Image 1 (cartoon, rainbow, N blue to C red):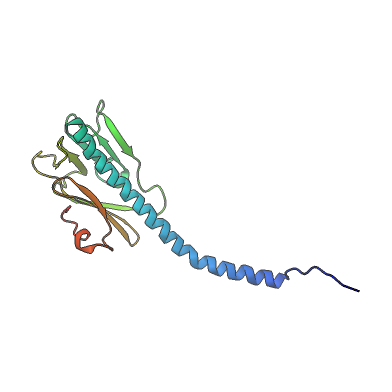
Image 2: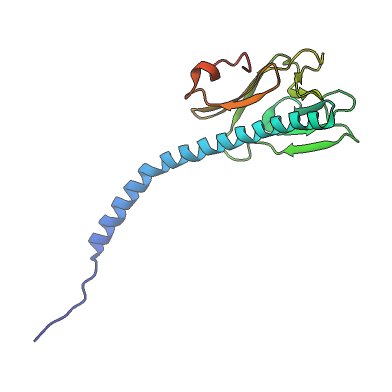
Amino acid sequence: MKTSFLRGFSLVELMITLGIAAIIMSMAVPTFKTFIDKQRLLTTASEFYSAVNMTRAEAIKRGSRVNMVATDGTNWTSGWKVFIDANSNLKVDAGETIIFSHDATNLTSSSIGITNNFTDSASTYISYTGNGRSRTDASSQQPQAGTVTFTLGTSVRRVKINFLGRSRICDPSVDLNTCGDTQTGD
């Protein structure tokens, strides 16, 4: 006579399995959060870089000055706007054409820090002339060169604008020789 019976898991075996799974998950969560933060930082820096390139392209296309300014006028974390500044006051006024607008960057609990170091640091802006060269607000002949630095935790990305107005994005942990200096955009 054959006896067959169904064998399952005992409660002790199930609890041990769940305990091991919980330990493994608790080790993975901090690494996953770091990964998400790095991706969020890279995305924000890339969106900013794209907006700088758009500002330059629009200036060339229109053959006139186009500005990119912080939405609140002082801090890039408030967002940024690309627009045609008809009265050259570095503010979006009624009737001026807004080409692009980006929302604030700190919409979640972890804050991205954004600092800049430019030739003209009186205001938070990037401006291009119709020939695609960066310029300061004071003079179309003086280039607006420098660096915008994005930080979140230990991760850093930089958008650098050189004296010709060309921009690039870099990671100082990978390329300290050309990305580490915050004084120049080169």
